[in-house]
Length: 165
Image (cartoon, rainbow, N blue to C red):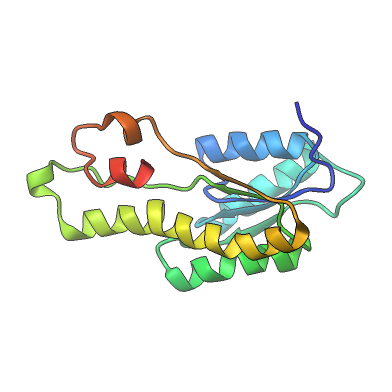
């Protein structure tokens, strides 16, 4: 599809269903990946799988960076860690997301805040952090994974829908 040889990509939520499919696709096209998520052992296992399946002569292999996107300090450190580890960042894929569904009149402040923090605020912070290295390199792509419910709405998701919109 594309030749991404020589490109570096950071993918959040890399071990989930959509995230792992995105990561496999990028790796199969030659990109070197920084795989991010909260489960270190799952990340390590997935990284090893990608390194075995998509060995490339032009890079040392994919890396994993554990990050809890609900922790703003860890979020602020993620892009710099990816840049330091990979030597740059060409592609940012903000894929990670959570749901905390509840009826609108029963939704707790924490259910709202958790979804907004991970699905919206972390996406903003990661995009902001990636702009400078991408501008310096005079190239960059940001891909924010959204959901159809961002446009259509969904019962019980008055937190998730606006975050994905």
